[in-house]
Image (tube, rainbow, N blue to C red; front, side, top):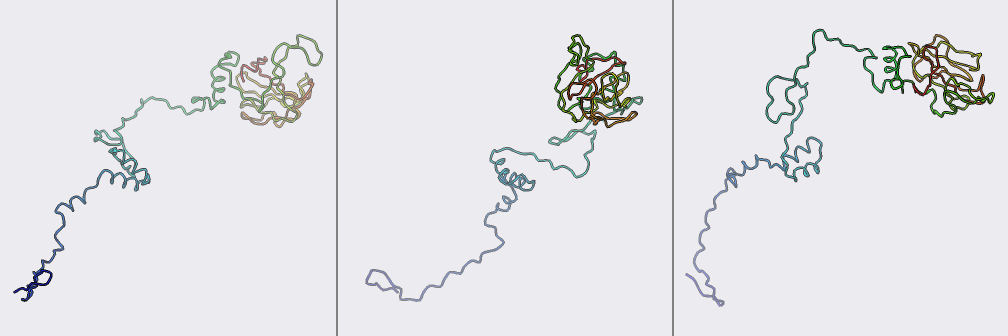
Length: 273
């Protein structure tokens, strides 16, 4: 039974209706039947970013790669050695099967230093040149650059060949070597590996002199020295300090007189330097 209120609403005068029984929510029922299935899938974006984080590429770099829409195939290297197999490699593998490398039964392996010569091994080049033939038969094109510089700074002050004598002033003097500017006491280096055959005073104008034999008729001489640091019979290597420059003998000032001799005859040093 109801009554009418002053504002027009009806108010019940009977007992209130009983509330509807609620349905207990089941905790086992998923909100979405396909939700768990979708959770098991990872988008390409997420795969790339997770790989970037795991491999150390960085999150930003991984996101940038993923943003480009590229599909990446990642191969994780094995911890053990990779062995070549004869089976065909599966598609997408990192490396294909490598062919076998074989050699004939009579193949000769030569590990001699002179057998492997490069521009970084000038002594090997010189040894190979001298081992193949006498120094007298070597062409200028072949010998060029085979000797090292006897000074750290090479400035020519008097070339090889005919010149005006700085001692007498007369013309037509034959200059047997190349003169390089050098203050007294400048270190002088061996132009190549060899054996010292002379170290002492040269009575014909060379002053203090050192001679190094490089084999097969090739020799170098260093003249007008203030002092020498090697003795006869000593083996030297390319670049070793053998003396100090000076102005001894027939000299008008501090410098290095450098000679190259082939089978006892002097030749132009520039053909070997």
